[in-house]
Length: 579
Image (cartoon, rainbow, N blue to C red; front, top):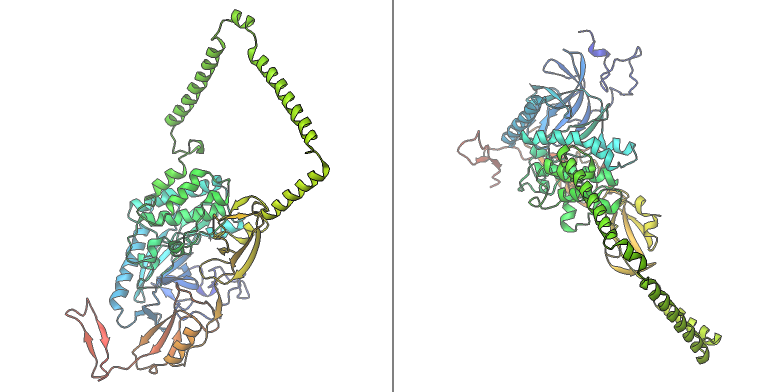
């Protein structure tokens, strides 16, 4: 091997300088999450594992190095932390007691997914999987190393939003890829600005594939749902998912791209749907594009746009869009219709002009003009009479004029202006509303408050309901989210279960208890936690649970198993008979 392992930086897999340091700044002596493999672990005798890049409920992604081909790779490890643990010494992953069957089932799903992606060679718009390795009682998917950034970062770096022309150019190749994936039985389920990557050429690539369990709430593992982008059916494990699920997510990404506004998440929309159409937020967005996005984001999947091809067709349904969707024949028909219409108009004008002989038109009197002059003279006479009549009756008296003026003024005090319809501010960003001349007829007051369902800076409530008729100058209080409330994770290790549950409940931290029946841990005492002490966690976060590991009751001769007839298929649950 040309490259020596010790000369590699485990942060970026670049060659270290003479002093043993790397410009990326990675410190190999820094603490590693206990769920992760130790850096410099070798997988399958070939792939060196570096630092952890990303972690979710299903697995962990590391930077890696292929010793055989001497090139960087990404290593994606199947490691469902909710139902498995790692041996710190060997790196082996083992399922928790009672979860063996589920662990194997999900691992088979993981392998099948990435094995299919490994054989998917028909597009440049998918992050390529190049190998699969069995090691440490788990599976590793090896990705080709491609330098990318997330589409979310790309969007931010370009001002936070794009025009429809820019979006169309960016996304059409990705739509073609997604259509091909769907036709081959793939459903991504996790499409968001984070799972869409942008390479050095500015092309969009689809990454972060995962099993259905990863992208469905209340599944066996902790889900990775994207607020604002996950479809409604993903919040209910009993709902049917399909390519329409990806249609919702893609439409939500386009919504964000065109408006710069994060759409409200599907769960909150089920309660009160305040989602504005894109063209309400930006009048420059074509109506057919806005309508297509709203159809694709319909909450009821039965009425939603069913396929990515249908969605693409709706986006491009205007003949003026100049896309390949409209062929030459259709373009010619449109041009022909316009020409025929123009010809018909010209013929109609000629017909009108020749309707009467020229000689007859020369001697015809302009009766219309005569009638108009007579009418104007009569009107002037009436005006003069009324003006004289008001002077005779004293209506022009200055004192009376002042009195009339004061009456009108009093009337204006009673009704200060015409009625206005209140706009829908919910779901819009404060930066887009505050100081905007469009809302100058209202007095807007902003109040900031923590909110777990809306990103920082987004309006989530208004004191006057949408479409309420109010007078000009009405005060409307808008509540602006400062994001979810954060709190430092307390130290639970060494405390009893009673102390920990009371403490976490009081702090409104979402947690899950994980028992360990091994004799090496003290009974009813916490020995580990998935979120380290001092780390910030979101208060009331329903999506992510802190795992609390504790020593459970040791086995005795009074323990028994239930059910079943075939323990390999159904290992059952442990029953503790306390007499």
